[in-house]
Amino acid sequence: QVQLAESGGGLVQAGGSLRLSCAASGLTLSNYVMGWFRQAPGKERDCVAAISSRSRYTFYADSVKGRLTISRDNAKNTVYLQMNSLKSEDTAVYYCAASDTAWYTRTYDRPSKYNYWGQGTQVTVSS
Image (tube, rainbow, N blue to C red; front, side, top):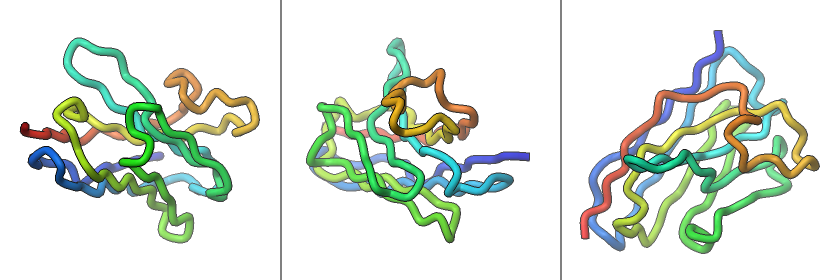
């Protein structure tokens, strides 16, 4: 049974930092593209970052470039999202997800391409 478990969310002041973790079990992480998505109330679930299976390639949404960094440790079956210089508009539930679709298809920002999802972790940035 595949499980993705996010942790590290919480309440932080604007300008602060958080590090999210996503621990995977029941799958071999190195076989998957991993993505971090977020969803604010009343909005769609959007991809903020994605990373190829061996960390060679990364993708960032324009709104987070230079502030968020995605990384992975396949040996630990864990993916991370380092979030710096947080803004109130970063407030959302953050989800990690695993996709078996190859990176070269450039569909890593599409939720429909992800096979497995975590339960989400709330990030709240106070201004």
